[in-house]
Image (tube, rainbow, N blue to C red; front, side, top):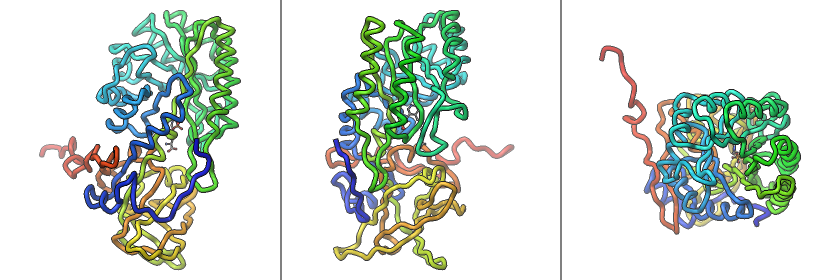
Length: 422
Ligand code: LLP
């Protein structure tokens, strides 16, 4: 289990393949994922009975296929994600459920799919219990409870407490038990997820809250889920969560419940970021180097249309320059920005939009810059803003790069648009 991380301001390869080779072969901007790193992260969590991947973090079919082949179950939050799981070879129904639909609402398509394919539902609102009960009585369901507190790396990723729209409010549990009974649904699972990128202290508080709620539900419970939220180190001074300690807390909770109920309980964990963040690299090219007063700007061909985390949360990502030649270039403080016609298109910013600098090697137009730890909530939050195509995605397996999504074409971007009368 790694405890400390080191980031270097220069990088020549990703998963054993030269960055320049990758850039030449696939163009830029391109996301590159290291399959071995994902498999390593899956193994870190093997103490849990089941690892369920929150595919919202990175839902390329090749990544889902890798998860499936390594015994990972999958979480879905929309009809589209259910279809992705299916397209990657997941069975939609089974024991334990290979696919779970976790949301606070059903839209018409999602409800139709979960009913038709008997997909297990993790209900995040009393309305979902009623709607599913009317459409498909007699099912097992999971309840996602909001314990009344939460925590995340940003206020925007905190999913607990009364300012969050997520989950069933803890005090409504009694009402939901009655609702489920009325509709012939059996509550076989209990789930809590208090936020993304939180810390061990906050994550640990969930055990107590879940145990209390489980006591109210009683022996019909067959499984509990710790949710996701495991952080990863994005900066030098950050370290990994003590996974052994985290598992021990959850295991003890599970054992106490099993003793009280007189039968074993399954323990799941539902990470997104932890499994894929460190595997992902965004390769971009420096297209302009300019001086604005005291600030030097490196302007890239990748922007917040490719990686939105800095503009959304002031998120920090390690960055590295691909060196030219062998001589080490001196470091300088630079602002790193993208190509978009919007001043917020800056990768080195803090929450609130405050522009900061980063110490990176002196570089010239044409050199490549790699944005690291970008595998989670990177490509999936991309957009076509400024009519920019979505990036290509490449998966490196055993030293071989595979194109797993081609770069969008202009025709892809305008597909579906129509000029009236034309
Ligand atoms: N389970 C549920 C019910 C969730 O809502 C989430 C994340 C996860 C699991 C996975 O959380 P993770 O292990 O990845 O922290 N776009 C934001 C993160 C949003 C997370 C939304 N829900 C970011 O870039 O940080």
